[in-house]
Amino acid sequence: MEQLSVTRAFEGDLHRYKHSSSSTSTNMVFAIYLPPQAKNHPVPVVYWLSGLTCTDENFTQKAGAFKMAAQLGLAIVCPDTSPRGLDLPGEHDSYDFGSGAGFYVDATSSPWSDHYRMYSYVVDELPTLIEGSFPVSGKKAISGHSMGGHGALVIYLRNPGAYTSVSAFAPVVHPTAVPWGQKAFQRYLGDDKSLWDSYDATLLVQQAEISDPILIDQGSSDSFLEEQLQPDHFKTACARANVPLTLNLRAGYDHSYYFISSFIDSHLEFHAHKLID
Ligand SMILES: N[C@@H](CCC(=O)N[C@@H](CSC=O)C(=O)NCC(=O)O)C(=O)O
Image (tube, rainbow, N blue to C red; front, side, top):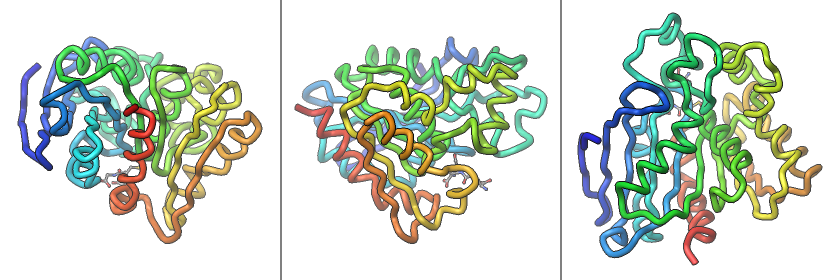
């Protein structure tokens, strides 16, 4: 791993690293915020998955999360949203597919399948690297925004017991039914719709046995609400499966990091409740 920077915040430190990834066969950059408590004992981790067009830096620079993370003693890990440094056909043509838009799936269609393996990267490779390199405990939670909210929900639902809790801001909850998801899944996963279904939180939650609540915040003035997000689909599926869901509809908030920064403290407190005994 190559350290790119280290920056003090609230008596903790924000580190950025570059490393060679076996999942994506590219270099990957991630950020980790270590709270001051990490100087004395291993701390639990919240993994944050960002949305379309983001790198690790959107969250670290705009979410305003580090004061509360320092107070609670939580590390926060922010991966990138796709492999970088490639030039695959069409990879950089649109904001909702390719670079900055890995959708946290393991692509099966060529040429994406050689590199776009963000599910394996986030679920397996990155936690192994983090737990082997930093003063963190094995306890982890997961959260994210929009495309990253989709990733957080899917990863939590597909890996029972691996994460103590999940939360999301304005997540894409039903990607097989909305344009962002359909475009990405068609190109990353091809025609096998059962594979699409295995990355759809609204479908996955119907088979889940979960007693811990899932937390979602959604802005009522989000311009993507009707076409891409549709949280009611997830709400209905949770109700059918008896999965407890707290879905907060926040009046007047949009899709931006102003919205995330307004409620990130409550999400960190939600995770800390499960992560810290
Ligand atoms: N029209 C925008 C669309 C991109 C956008 O809104 N990205 C969101 C996530 S959307 C779902 O995954 C985002 O987090 N942007 C970064 C930010 O710092 O706000 C565009 O083309 O930029």
